[in-house]
Structure formats: C-alpha cells, structure tokens
Length: 163
Image 1 (spheres, helix red, strand yellow):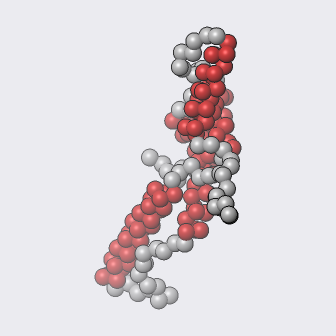
Image 2 (cartoon, rainbow, N blue to C red; image 1 turned 90 degrees about the vertical axis):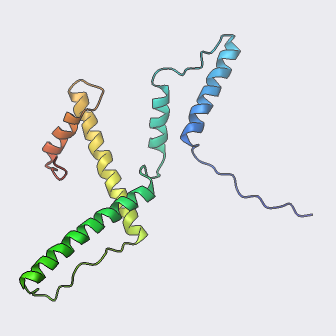
Image 3 (tube, rainbow, N blue to C red; image 1 turned 45 degrees about the vertical axis):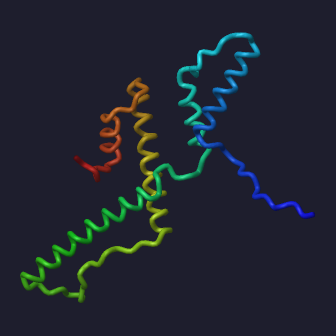
C-alpha cells in the first residue's frame, strides 16, 4: 500500500513569537536543571536581541504589502486628481496643449513595480535609520531622537518631507 504524500516541512527561521517562546522554555529548563526557580522574566534586552537577530536574518519585507500598495495607489490618485484639475483649469482658460496632451488618467501599476517601489522605500528608510543611529551614538546617546533625523536629512540634502 502506498503511503500518502506529505508536503515537505517548512525549514528556515521560526516566526518571532516562536523564537521568544523557545528562548523562554530553554531558560526555564536550564533553571530546573540547576535546581533554582525561574522568575518568568527574560534578561533585560534579551527579547530585543532576539528581534534584531530575526530581522537581520530574514529577507522578507518589513512593511505589509497590502498597506504599502494601498498607500501608493492613494498617493497616485491624489496626484492624478491634482493634475486633472490643473488641466481642466488650463482648458477653461483656453490654453492649448502643444503636444496633444491628454488629461491624466488613473495610474495602473504592475505588482512587480509596486514591489520594486516597496523595496526601494524600505531600503531608504533602513539606511536613514542607520545614519540616525550613528548620529545618536556620536552624541553619546543610545536612543534615536527626532533631532537626529533632522540632522541626517539636512546633511544629506533630503528635505523632501519638510514639515
């Protein structure tokens, strides 16, 4: 008789919550072997180190795809509506378009283009936060503050998101 086929077991890094739980179980077992009681709390900064290792090891995107795609489409829609209003205003004033320009339509994007945008956005944010961390360390601090981000934006000349 033929055995039923089973899908291969998923290998690779565990989800973050499973890693934390596994670390807690290991600590609990270690304490039991040594004959002492475990308080149930992990050492200070231990969970943060587990999270850091998890995100350094993984290659998946940090921002959820659906939310990012929705934000991009919303921005494109706003730009399209603004361009259409400008075109409508010029048309009412009687200004003719030289190159037979048509009014802007809603933007359509392929999924690969959206993924490329998301990859680039995450790369930019990661690089910026890395520089912010370096600025905080230079100021002899551990915590990244808004003034670090302002300094990095000023030094890089990226005042795109000026407030």
